[in-house]
Length: 115
Length: 116
Image (tube, rainbow over all chains, first blue to last red; front, side, top):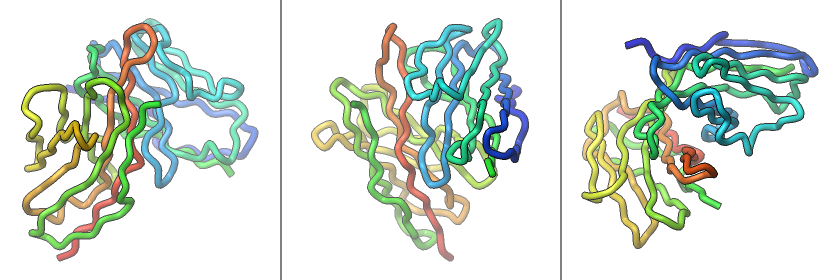
């Protein structure tokens, strides 16, 4: 079974530039999550999709971050413009969509460095 | 607000010794609790979960955890640690948000070092 795919694996940009991350969840998984993991901290949920609708984006800095999940499958997370404090690993996860989510399947993440 | 606390940032144990990682949660209703492990170069992986029933749950790789409602705790244990258990361990809780959905909130993690 294919896992959660993320790209790119690494990205280095300068502050004020824009960047986009892509995620392909496990086939059939209705729920998709984007987490931000800053070095030394636990993952923080940025946005959660149920199919192609947003169910939680309370911790997403909406002045600079945006995300979409077209057709309820792939998802893109964008940062524009980036700040130094956005340096982190961005993790995508998916689950079947049950309540509670029995298991989150995580991708390998995208490590972002903002210089 | 719902929260998960892992009081130990870093723990070092000798190979073969027993292990206990602490987790406390703050949540009004019956919690849904998880332990995930993040090994170097690998993604987060579910070790075990508690939803209801027997308060002692078994997971993969020989780990177990015990839910204690009176202490709001869900501590992870292993009787004998192997060098390959060196990783970062995250406690997490699922809780309700609007629309009847649930979100998963993670603790800050405990980094485990295993010495020979």
